[in-house]
Amino acid sequence: MMKIIKFLIFLLCLQTSWLLHAQQPTTIFCHGILNTQHQMNQYSEFLQNPKTTFDFPDAQKPCGWNFNNSIYQIYKMIRNQPLNREKMYMGYDLDVQALKDQIKSDEPYILFGFSRGGDAIINYLAEHDTENIKAIILNAAPADLIQSIDALQKAIGYTFAPTRADQEKLFNMIFPTYKIGSIPPKDIIPSIKNKNLPIFIAHAKTDTVVPISASWQLYIAFLQAGFTNVYLCQLESGVHKAYHQSPDVMKFLQGLHSFYKKYGFDYNAQFAIIDDFSSLQPSIDEIAQKLIV
Image (cartoon, rainbow, N blue to C red):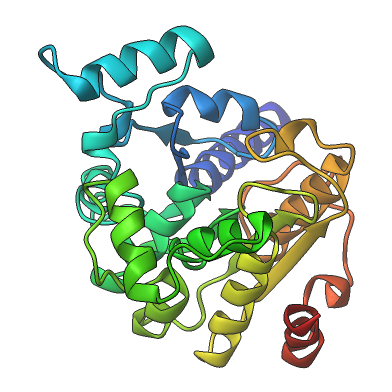
């Protein structure tokens, strides 16, 4: 009799374990520009199973022999990275569609976006039903792509595109599939319906490609739009495209896995050690002051 009871307990535990695993959302990793789905491999410690990824359109090799293909071949040879200007939608249009194609309406998901991938996530959430999206992670995501042109002007000390309209035209010349008049991610956030969505934002203060001010703007935009579960992890150092190698990577891992644990997702107990999240939830005034400085 005792053996039968033990066996039944074993079956119950096995079934419970299976059910817990079955209920875990699938993490979809959304890569940045000049990269492919293989970028997910760099973030293995950040992503819990089950997980998957895909290629955005700009990861595809151009067809035929033309100027765009020549640029692609040269850049691939020099940097070993894809540069398909004719399919760089910069988080809009077919990028959003590519993400939508990965999502089944009857399954739960966590969306993890790096750089442009983060913008595609924001734009997707603003355009589509979000009931089955259980959390999002935004890693070094731009708040407004056009700001990069103004930042370049300030860096070189010369104004060649004084108005936003001029800056958009120039941006469109560089990325021809970007549509002039597109709403910046920071401004489209209020359109996202689920204000209880858990949101984890991470950015390095030393990122020179997408400055941390972008995540400050996104963080404020989420809070001002009424989102209640927003977290900001500010890394002291880190290079764009290489946050997984940042000297401050442990802060990212601990914050993220503690976030997973807090909201009932699968997590790594080695990193999920944070119980007090106050350091990851600064006030709007505190972050707004940083933007002024």
